[in-house]
Image (cartoon, rainbow, N blue to C red):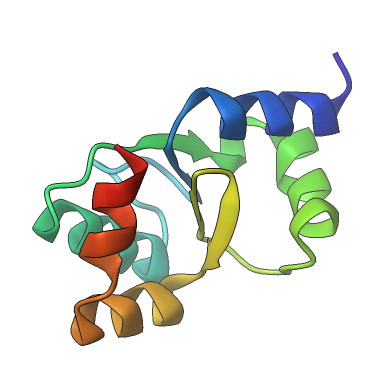
Length: 103
């Protein structure tokens, strides 16, 4: 399976996907850790992909999303953004609605 097809499959198979550095239990960058904390504060159910474990996805996703940094949060297959955007949406009370609509 081509790497872009794998990404599309991951995004279509799970309503909320976080591409991050590390895992929710052991984030390997502060931005990934903050994003996980926000998702947990929203009681979000999400699938994560540790980009360090899949270098092909790590490189291809930058092109696929036109977003050069990680983490990247997707809801219903749509890129929401990185850490700053996720925090901003949470502070505005908008993230919870997006997450609720995805489940």
